Every structure is written in C-alpha cells, then in structure tokens.
Amino acid sequence: MIIEKKVAETIAKYKLLKKTDKVVVALSGGKDSTSVLYILKKLGYDVEGLMIDLYLGQWSETHKENMLRICSEMSVPLTIVDLKEELGQGICFIKAVLKKQKNLTGCTVCGIIKRWILNKWAKKLGADKIVTGHNLDDEAQNVLMNFLKGNVLLGVNSSPATGGKEVKGFAQRVKPLFFCAENDIRAYAKKMKFDILYDKCPCSFETYRADTRDWLDNISDGEKLAIVENFQKLVPGLRRENVREMKVCGKCGEPASSELCNACKIFACL
Image 1 (tube, helix red, strand yellow):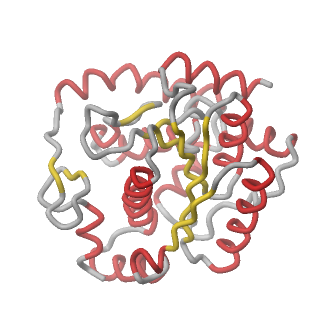
Image 2: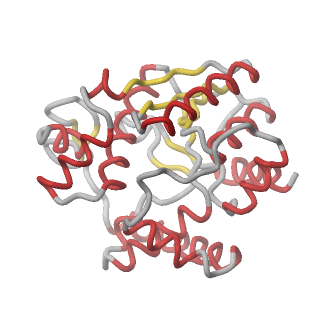
C-alpha cells in the first residue's frame, strides 16, 4: 500500500530505525499512532506501545480500551502512564490553572507535558527510538504557525528525526509519517478496519492550532508537502546558526535549555 511504502522509504532515507532497535511508539489511540504501530510491526520492527491516560473523560477511556485490545491482538507490549499518578491531576485541571496563571493555551501545555512524560518513560523502557504519529498536516501546521508568530526558529528541530545519542538525556524521536497526508492515513486506517475513534481531541477547538488547521484544510496535500519540503531545506542552516547548549534541569534531571525545563516551570504553578 502507498502509506506503507512511503513509511518504509522515509525510514530508509532518513535512517530513522534499525531492525535491532527497541522502538517505543507513542500511542494516542487515534488513526496516526495506531497506523504507524501496525505498519512498523508489519515491517518487522521490535515495537511496543506507550500511552498517557490524560483523563479526558470517556474520550480517554475509549482510546485506552481500544489500545489495550489492539496491542493485545498484535502481541505488542503496552505501557499506560496514569497522568494523575504521575502529576497528581488530569490534563483539564492542569490546563485550566496554566491558562489562568500564565495565559498558556491548552495545546502548548499538553504538548510540553506529553513530551516530558514520553521522554522520561521511553528511557525507563530502554527505548532506542520513540516514534510519534506526527503527519504531513501536523508539520505544515507547525511551519505556518511559527511563521505567523514571527519566529521560524521554533521549528528548528522539525524533521523526521530529532535528538539522538549526541543529545544527552533525550530519547531520539522519529516520525515515519512525516510526509504522509492526514487524508491518506485516515483512508488507510479505515481500509484496515481499525476499531478506533476518529474524532479529534475534544480540547483541540478554538485554539491557534485549530485555526491554522482549518485554514490548511483549504489547500491541497501537494501544497502542504511543498510547505514542509521547502522548510526542510532551511533546517540545516537554521541549526548551524542557532546551536543551543543543552543542560540538565535542576528539578527533575531531564534535558533543558535553561536551569529548569519547560515542564518543571509548569509544575511549579500547580
């Protein structure tokens, strides 16, 4: 199938994975992460799932039940991180506090927390690589949002692979769906008859990302690909001109660009 071929080509071209790697797939329960888990398993990679229970009501419960069933059917180990056990609160409470105290949007808060947990737990699981389900549409949104914010440097790490052994403390994140359009992934998931929810996150409305997503829905997948591919041409130069020294967070010990990582700055407000 086209998606499977594109994933295999992206892995090969960017040297994302080796068959000897222990590959942890970050599962949200949606079409993207479910599809990439299935494809990597089919391609012969040593995969296991890692999921965060965000406590978004029935939406989270259904996703969790679906992933438990699908991973069992695929004979794939699954670790579920309970956000309340990890941080003491569900994501809705955390986002409400940060909105009031720091005027941070929900997607920003959720992204910082999920990256922190995924990196921490991927290392606990002994992962060589952690795979996320970010697709072409996600990457096009990132390019456009950063441009509109007037800071394209925010996307300096936007590529099919970020981090690596040379970046101490990070489990290397790879995105095999980087050049796969969301419409194609949805069609693939439905053709494979994955019994999952196809709804968007219940919190992903009336946000900056949602507005950007809606605007990009009006352009073709080919135009989205052009946006992403053209930005990729700029990334090597941006990285050379903006080398950041990574430190260790004084609070949690995770990687940070300052004395405290972004996650611990958030946790200090709770």
